[in-house]
Image 1 (cartoon, rainbow, N blue to C red):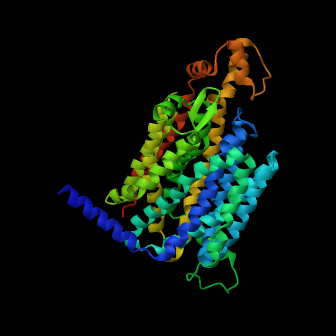
Image 2 (spheres, rainbow, N blue to C red; image 1 turned 90 degrees about the horizontal axis):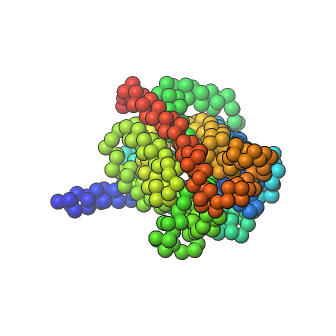
Image 3 (tube, rainbow, N blue to C red; image 1 turned 30 degrees about the vertical axis):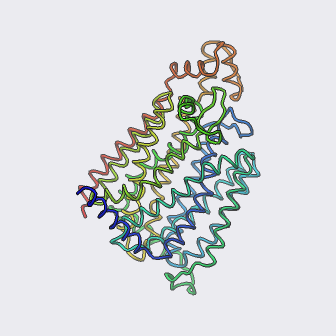
Length: 478
């Protein structure tokens, strides 16, 4: 009986997938290449910018990293609010073509600049291009998905997106081992491959290409729709999830590099060398491959999870997803031991694979047929609030309460009266003064300062979002 039910579920799911038109798959190939390039850079940026004990990095402060991510997130997520509406009215294809060129320029700037302002300018260029690309792509995807198949369509979209993300960490690690510059140049080459696909992409959704562009009606339409209570409140509430999302991808990599001990797991699993990294504390699982656990699970499970929760109202599914994401983030950094980090990543991933498709599905459902790109761009207001605000908050909290080099400097000042220590040398200096090896010193600092407290504010933010979403669902029933 159970086998027959499972077989029926799989057959229905496959029928939904077969009904999706061919252009959907071409658009997803565009998304996959863009995401592969983006992920190669995103995964390395927190380490490259702010990790104090790596060779060739920028070695800037965590607060500087937060400021860079703030402007990157702000530009990348404010631009779609306007570009989505213009892409709907004029041309998704042309918008994507121009955005690809801009993204590539941004990667080349990041590859060549090591001073703050030119580097910041490169991230802003990258954010501009990415902000133009995403709503044009998602608007095109939304038009290809029948409303009755939207749950499956968006789940497949996120599954393929995460297939690209899955290949991002090993490729990013490979490029990093060549040089830091190779990470950015490699990503530029990958994104430029999309120009070939764009040339063969037909577009039949725009009938206004020969008309003069009138900006006022488009901008007015943006604010008219955004100020609808049902839309504006939902967008604001979901910023709580995007704050958690930002910490997982911006702050947690530094935390893992600083604190998480995965040496026991690496030995127990007999992992190959390409999945490992050498640190002062011994051989650890590389943070790139820890994040690949997230991408791999999403790729394998997002379609099934979305289908399984299709009977639950979108907003209640979102509440469950946000709860799991918050708990998973906390577990990822709650202890010194790598096994808990792995469990936390798995729990967070379940929350993410439930939340992201439902987030897009809800916005697509609220939109009219001719406003898909516009409403998909509203997703980015939540991201602007969550990623922008979360980057500043996360950078500040991590610097003062969890960064190992900062805590070492504080310990040297408090216990040894030593000041003016270079952050890149602080941990080694403390090791010398305290006469402890890196493992014992890390454990001492962990017990002294309890850096896991840095995750508690984000648990609170997630709970507030869940409660708010519950009352929102009671008020706006559909």
